[in-house]
Length: 126
Length: 505
Ligand SMILES: Cc1cc2nc3c(=O)[nH]c(=O)nc-3n(C[C@H](O)[C@H](O)[C@H](O)COP(=O)(O)OP(=O)(O)OC[C@H]3O[C@@H](n4cnc5c(N)ncnc54)[C@H](O)[C@@H]3O)c2cc1C
Ligand code: SF4
Image (cartoon, rainbow over all chains, first blue to last red):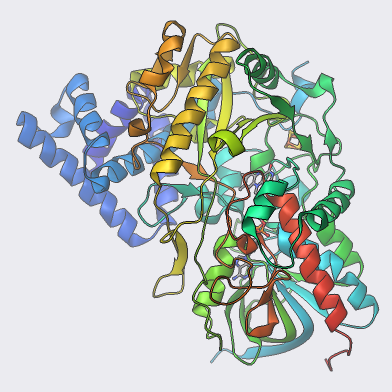
């Protein structure tokens, strides 16, 4: 499942593909910590959903999700994002939320995008 | 076997947010007269130095489910805090008074607008509510004013309740400068100075028919923020003459639903509303000041005409990323433009409808059922178009909104009606969140149409009061905290008149 999850993360946030090992460790730690506090049913649901993504990839393109090129991965996730079934849209929403949390929850990512909020406010910006 | 400790009070207040903090302060006079008043608060009491402004760290410390509490079908995130001061610790502190037309529409017998205005004014003065001086207004807010006026909208300045604001823009992660005047800074400390007890990490599990509360006091988890509980960890049975529920619009209905109350309350948990909200961004050609300065200084109120309100806002990297529609390259490009982003919060004025309600699961945990009505989705689409117009009128090159595709270039500004429609607001695809949680124990005339009367007395149980946002019979259509305080003030007044004899400790 780890491989599908990483492939989803790099599709949702393409820059994640450039992360070094330490960056990935930070990202995974954030996601693990967030999931640790949530009900087991939610974690189980996410695992099942990752399996479903892989299954759809095989059904559509005869390849595992992680073996698809970036454009096909993005198309497949976009299809799920607009699926008529709420369960599918919701599953993807949950996964993308985790991906964003793992990536943008790192102070390094905040710096990279130019986010500079500081408790000292105007004093450090004027 | 663990022992249950017994305690006795004249009044027990459950929850310490906008409602509970107000009741605590207003009942302090009873303590001077020898009565015993206690506030039981589930969340921790954080020290001033613990407000770091770090996004994930503060969200985990202050918000229910770290800010990720979802409605039952997973299509909306509900933001509410659990701490000494409740959600006032994380609110932005915009301070508006209830509109007369809304209070008239509520038509609660015995509740009149003038009374709410008088009481709101009292708390506005207490909390130092004022208009921020011009030198503290950042570009994000200025662009909203400029764009809004050019777009032909009436832009108003928010009165805010800050003292010594340094403009860190971190209000929703708890103010690191203790500038925001929530109940954690004003009403609760005042109540404590006067002898009201406040016990944190104390969760009321159930209210018994004999007016006794089952309370669990938790220990401080290793490494967690906040001080230890004021009572030793363990189980308590707390008896009271009067019980005031101020656990919030989710906490109070849930608590009453899992308690064995000897009254028929068919409306309990019903009529939940929450002003479903969206974060919309416009990208400018140059850097602007957005993540410095008070985040929310202006608004456009189209509630009466179009069912939405627009407010300035500024969020943190993860919340922003999560709130933008879509993913991939165009999403990343918008995130990388962070220093150039203008941000607007759109709130839809939803209505109490059958089915939107608070319930509890088998373990007694709250579950919120919420469906977006076609009217709410239309209001979101109208509001999105108005927000996009403001951004373009202010000079934005493009906006990122729930459209297909989400990026709309300035050249398409005249096609907004076609580009943004209700069908784009597909629940489960678009990130909708809400922070104005209301209803569940609505006020009214009788148990057939409500849970309490206009003074927060639960129908059929005069010893049980409600004093929080759950009292709203329908959406308020503006930011609610001052109105919650005004209603809580009425509840406290009713109690003061009744509690005369001290109870034996
Ligand atoms: C991010 C954010 C920004 C906001 N900005 C604004 C704004 O600018 N202006 C405005 O007017 N409003 C704003 N609001 C809304 C406002 O903060 C809330 O409407 C208000 O605080 C609700 O008051 P309350 O007393 O109903 O509940 P809360 O303030 O939420 O307090 C409820 C308390 O009860 C406690 N509790 C729950 N269950 C139990 C239990 N069983 N036992 C013991 N304790 C319990 C909780 O831990 C919590 O501390 C904002 C809200 C949020 C989340
Ligand atoms: S902007 Fe002002 S009120 Fe808000 S967190 Fe910063 S200092 Fe506090």
